[in-house]
Length: 283
Image (cartoon, helix red, strand yellow):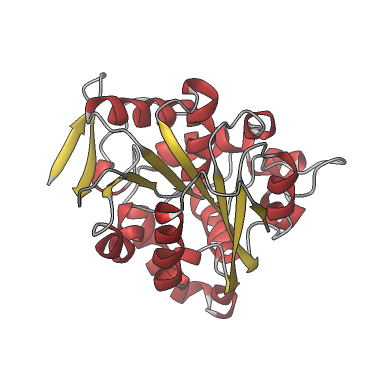
């Protein structure tokens, strides 16, 4: 097992597989782990150097929990990994919270180390309001909902999130669902999860989207679960560089595990694409 030691002494678990002129960094979402990429990486490592790792408080990095991290903290961790492993020519891929890490990295460190970006099924602003309806829970999550959650026990809030993420879970009786959901939570540190959830929901990364200076591909689920497929159009209107959107039909927010073969195939297309050709913007 490999661990990367951060400047504060805490350690993040990571895997470094494959080789080549391109580097692919893939970051997981909230309450997930690097294992979400275990199947795709076996394909992609034949075409690039692939880095996957567990964020603070998640999976094998569960004990990296001495502080209350924010999304900026995770972006700083990513920057330390890039610098510490001397990574270059980077395709930076983030799914869900991982996409939020990408946007925070761009805001704090720019795109100088990056070749291109892949964002997977994530909104730049989770809180919906009168002028924004492309946030969490298909446009239904508001500041009032955030206030309502304050001080509530963690498991019911996580269950609500899990059921929204994977709608078929609604059909499973609560007493049967509790054990597998608790098992997922056992792999994470609750205080870190709470801190990151609060940080994510307080952010508005829409201005950062317009600051991106490298090509962007957006993977999205349709009909989706957490977020509206219409986000693909919004990104197309606000990203100023080469842009492409890839639809994952009949998928939920869990599009990677829903269809790992398609995910691997589409990532490989991005890796092999010549960023200089025709500059097309497709949706």
